[in-house]
Amino acid sequence: MEFVNVEKGQKTEFKLDRMLFLSALLGNPHLGRLTIHVAGSKGKGSVSTMAAGILGAAGLKTGLYTSPHLLRWKERIALSNGEMPEATLIAAMEEILPFVEGKPADFFPGAELPTYFELTTLVAFCAFRAEGCAAQVIETGMGGRLDSTNIVDPDVSAITPIELEHTQFLGDTIGKIAFEKAGIIKKGKPVCLARQKGEALAVFRARAAESESALRLVGAAIDAEDARVAPSGTSCRLVAGPDAWASLKALLSPAGLEVHSPIIGAIQAQNMALAAMAAACALPGLKPADLVRGLAAARLPARFELVRADPPVVLDGAHTPESIRLAADTARSLFPGPKVLLFACAYDKRHAEMAAILAPHFEAIVVTKPGTFKASDPKAVYASFAALRPDARLEEDTAAALALAAGEAEARGAALLVTGSFYLCAEAKTFFA
Image: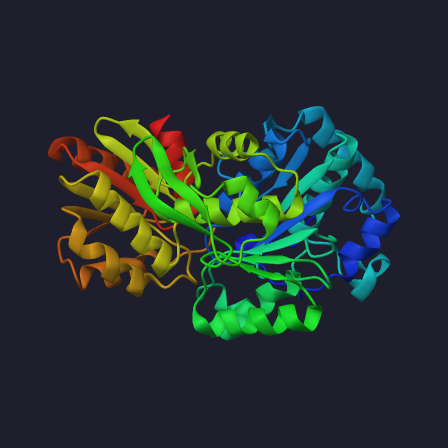
């Protein structure tokens, strides 16, 4: 039985009726536990992982749903303290199977079969229920308003910064994309926001007012100061802002709270602030030690992940211009010597803008395909780089490109940054293992 997989570029009409229909048949496994729902254009995986770590450190058995996976599908459905037992995942699939196996399209609302992502999301909810999770942190796949995860009834919604992304699905302006992300804001439930561009913030303010939802902002209720980035991770001091509520002020104390995450990058200080605010909002009795331990335990592959130290090899799934800029800035800060770039991205990414950001900062550049899973146009990507750097090289075979880039880094004693696609990072993770 073949199900539509939007991650492979296959088309479907986004709507929630199939999710609501199947969830009802399954006894609404998405309900009945404390929930933080996370959307945004960049950083939502980091924020979700950090928030789940905090809830877990506070003693709540917490399920974590993220996407995409890097090496194994089961990475998407985890517990805050580690992997979901395989037996639980299999049992969750078996629970769903009778409602989809052999069913014709017209069995489902709209006469369309459920998608790969919808079924994966249902497996997550069933697994969290079977494991007796008291809490769950759910990352949206794409957008928010019509995302398969948006059947949850969150205690808190959290939204990371908005950029132009997936414009063929979400709209071609920051405002249109923010409108889709704002769809996770629920009536009377607080929403925690990262720093946003003015156009996005206006949309979120309007939606929060319409939904009678308290709006809590990084930079106003909480902030991250004195961010320090090292190969061991990111440290900062979380401080209460002028709009902090009483329990958040008590949590952070007048002097602020020193925290550390093993996830590398200056932006991770802001992500820690958003995750901490969302967790404190969901769990008013949160203790400082829980916050510190939860952030320290949060790990996420391919977010400026150092997989080899000498010469340094870094994997970063950045695939938007702003996240690419952050990755490049972090690489220049941590590795001031020579650097080699291996880049690939999916066909729908803004490769010309990313090439302009990256090209000046690397001694050697190799362009390739992001593996075979995702549709790509490596020749067009290469043209964007070659226009700025005629010495850039195109090697469409991903394994050969990895060997070429690794050889260049070795010969030059240079750091290697692999970026542009989580799918490329997955290939690299296997190569450097």
